[in-house]
Each structure stands twice: as structure tokens, then as C-alpha cells.
Amino acid sequence: MRRISFLDMRITRLFSYCSAAIVFIACLGFAGSATVRAQSEQSIVALVNDQPITNYDVTQRLRLLTVTTRREATDALRKKVIEDLISERIQLQEATKNSVVIPDDQINEVFSRVAKSNNMTGKQLIASLAQMGVNAKTMKEQIRSRIAWRSVVQRKFRGQVSVNASQIDKAISGEEPASGKKETEFQLQRIQLKLPDGSDQRTIAARLVEAGKLRRRFRSCSKIAEVAKLVRKATVKSVGRKSATKMVQPTRAILLSAKEGEMTPPVITSSGIEMYAVCARRSVNRNDEQRKQVRSKLLSQEYNILARRHLRDLRQEAFVEYR
Image (cartoon, rainbow, N blue to C red; front, side):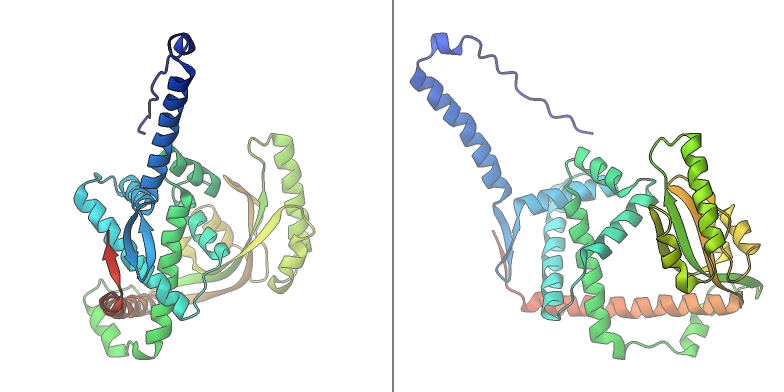
């Protein structure tokens, strides 16, 4: 982390050697430097259809990029950042034009997943970025533009993108064939009971008792939200369909021993106490799963090609002025 050192200003005898007028001028000088710095941050680097990209925007994104990729902040990288920001402005403008609105809750959910993948909470990630001079809003706005652009592309080209069986067969022929072995797939709801930081054994034991009561009250996934309300700071989140092979131990073993319509015993994790409601379970063929994954991959490739073309066309039509 880069440490910023401040100038040691020794002004003990300033008033005894300087007149009041000189002191006043000096103070104006310090205030002026702060004003100049603020003006520099807000100076416009480019206009995109009359929407400005400021020096602050560029600096923040450049810092984020160097932090996440460990690349050196060169002039070439700065130019790339400016071009990326121009593209994102155009993408968000197109989203607005098509009435695509991404709620803050969705942005925060993705941000939290990024934090979790780095073994941090959302607040910890915000603090970590701040230590490196990056405002978390910079990352969140990047997330917003990506989600919004994906929605624009899917809306515009949904009827033009399709993948047939022969394309899937051809793609699979170049992959290692699946064994055809059966796997168990679950439809899950995750229940989490928060634990305060530094919880002692008594607090943990009390929460485990509450978790046990919630588990005994559970009857079906359709009523799980109502049951969770009876326990303080209990949250419910839909996990969706999940293969047993994608779950880590000991959760995988616990789920495999659970029946459909049951809730798993409580397990203590780094973020609290967790249980899973098994809304459904089924046996799937790995060959079917492989075909599903290949189809998804091919669709994504088709959308990416169309997205690049659409962005190229929008950039050609846009008014971009570099300052």
C-alpha cells in the first residue's frame, strides 16, 4: 500500500516574523492548492454524447484496474481505461434509452459475491478498496454497466440467437466425453442465522437452539419465509438448482443424506449458522448436464459476438470529444 507523507509545517514563530498581510496571503496559497487539486479531479477528459468523463473517473478506474490485475499504471493502460469508460457510458445510455433499470439491491448482491470470493464481507471489501484509494462506487458502477449492457443485448437479440442439437454435438465432440454417471441435483433454499463478530460459546449455543426450533417448525419451502420470521436475524435465500458435486463438504454429505421436503441440521460457518431446505431432489445424467453446459456456452458466445457488433455501431454513431 502506498503511504502518503504530509509536509511538516513548522509555524511556531510565523506570527513573530511575518506581518498579518503575509500570513493572510500564505493561507490563501494553501487554500488555492486544495482548490486546484479539486478542479483537476473534476476536469473533463472526454464527452460522450455530452455526458462527461472526469479525471477523477479515470484515476479511480485506473487504480481499481491496477489493484485487481497488478498491472503497472502506464500511459497505455490509462488510454485503455478512458476507452473502456467511453464504451460503458454508451452502454448505460443505451440501457436508459431501452428503459433498462438495474436496482441497487442487484448491484450490492454482485458486490457481496465478489467480496465473498475474496473471503471478505461487503464492508471489509469497501474498507480494503478505500485503503488503496479506490471508492467502492467505482467498482459498483462497473458492475452496473455490465449487467445493464447484458440486459440490453439479450432484449435486442433474443429472437436472433439459437443453438441446435448438431451444434451441441459438434462442440461436445471436441470435449472429453462425460461418463454418463448419475448425479444428484437439488433445489435448495439456504437459511442463515447471523452471529455477531467474536461470539462466545454461550451465544453460539443459543443460536443453535433457535436454529433447531426453526428446523422443527419447517414443513415446506412455500412457507419457509414465514417460519424464518419467527427467529431473529434469520435470512432466507434461494440457491436454485445445485448439483451435489458443486457443494463443498460437509454440506454435500449432509444434503445427500437429506430427503426432499426436509431441512438439514444446522452447521456453523464463518458467516453464521446455516441450514438448507431441500425443496426438491432428482437424479440427473452427466451427459445431459454436459449438453446443458455446452448449450449455455454456445449461446454466450453468440451473444458476445452480437454485443461487440452492436457496441461498435453505437460508438460510430456517438459524439465523443476528447479533451
